[in-house]
Length: 276
Ligand SMILES: C[C@](O)(CO)[C@H](O)COP(=O)(O)OP(=O)(O)OC[C@H]1O[C@@H](n2ccc(N)nc2=O)[C@H](O)[C@@H]1O
Ligand SMILES: Nc1ncnc2c1ncn2[C@@H]1O[C@H](COP(=O)(O)OP(=O)(O)OP(=O)(O)O)[C@@H](O)[C@H]1O
Image (tube, rainbow, N blue to C red):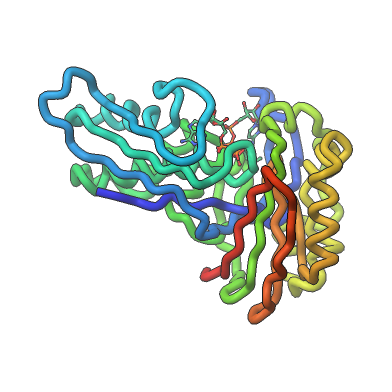
């Protein structure tokens, strides 16, 4: 059985307070975009170990046991005593990009196992499992535009459709550690709460919808800020860093012909159309 874990972008990201457990409360709108990995599982009867992971495409740092798809499998195995499996992960989503690629792989693994072995776990329970694997992992269970608060796992509906908008995502060859990025943040209440700013016309987002990580990440890695500027220069109606970086996305009005830009070597570029 195969699935296609997609990315999220953050439309606004306010870090509002540091919690006693070291994590941070935040406010954001998660929006799914069809830049996808491919994840396949097969039962591997009589295998001498519980899982075998075959990785393809972009490299991921760390041992197979550290891979979030394996952590997701071991979590479900503990609860449901699953048979041994063979996993194929085709990695197209860049890491350290703020696109939630690892979290998405993990959430889709939970859903794949639930479907393949007919475990009957509800979406709500899958969200609970997902939240133990990563702060933004639970979003990928329902995988639709949503307002999130808490550490990124408390959801409420949002009235928003960007169906037909064009998107360009650029990731320079810069790795931003999410943990490090949070450690440079001074939490505060935003001037324009994300939940309110998102209801305004997209043309107004440039002045009201803010990603708090930009203030500390741009000075450390000026190239990221330069990409954002360039996206506006090319006609983006809204541009922002996603998550803790280092990727930047630009939204363009429906029908806009996305420009061909030479971003240089080692720069990842994705172009697509939003469909939610
Ligand atoms: C920044 C975002 O991309 C916004 O969508 C996400 O909140 C990141 O979520 P994530 O990658 O799933 O984060 P995790 O892998 O759970 O956490 C990585 C590290 O980031 C910090 N962290 C993460 C989420 C959060 N709400 N507060 C934090 O302080 C913690 O130090 C944690 O050890
Ligand atoms: N399946 C996976 N795909 C990508 N990274 C993984 C995976 N499993 C574990 N990791 C580890 O998680 C780290 C962060 O990966 P991820 O792709 O989620 O980054 P990110 O873009 O910073 O995401 P986020 O928006 O959640 O902060 C990587 O450095 C890698 O070591």
